[in-house]
Image 1 (cartoon, rainbow, N blue to C red):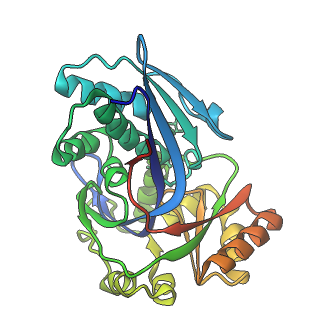
Image 2: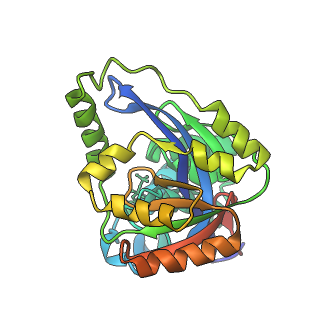
Length: 306
Ligand code: ATP
């Protein structure tokens, strides 16, 4: 058994995020189509005297380097399931924007589950890992699975979605993050203002068949037209400057634009890799974001590299 395990794990964008009413448990019913893209974190797990965390990357200062880190919580949870004291050092190399609506913390938790399982030789059944992942957070099971998947319930009940070929994206990273609970709160507030009730007046959301067909056939133009995110008005309300970012991408020829999850990262679909490289350069120069990164997908979920 290797004494160090490195796991690579991708970011996600929700190509559809349909948000239903607030449930009695405080969560929202969701129909969420997760799409894993080639922007990665790497989590390296090494035996140590006690549980510790370090973080590298441009946003490292915004990530807790203690037991509150979602990766550390994942190591503790897996250990408690198998009666193992989690004596590991977790090093997180962050390429996924922090608090960016791309589920970076959830990805690290999925990577830590896979990495500790490999290091400890626990050989956890995928169903057990998925159950522990759902306990850690709604987006964590998708970090294990990757590809494209429909998430129902609070987003954690996953079914794989077939796709035909690769799609090309650009992600405009903002300065500073947005809090996911704050964005859901703003979504409820806007819905209440609108005369409805965020609790009761909304149907249980469902996946859009037009979007699923575009994914299945690999039709980027149809996918671009079908992208949707019910959290986008709330993210724009909390961060009005994102309207200029979205406009800059649309003006530069993106075939689909949307806020990624709870934002503030903005996602742009383009037709090929060359268009992605060109749009990333244009957006970075536009001054409407901190940086813009091209990435293709779908890609696999958390994967051991060594
Ligand atoms: P989501 O899309 O799932 O709502 P997000 O991408 O918007 O998530 P994250 O990057 O997961 O947001 O981080 C949200 C907060 O969680 C951060 O501000 C940070 O304080 C905390 N956090 C805990 N562990 C991690 C981690 N491993 N990586 C990033 N943030 C973490």
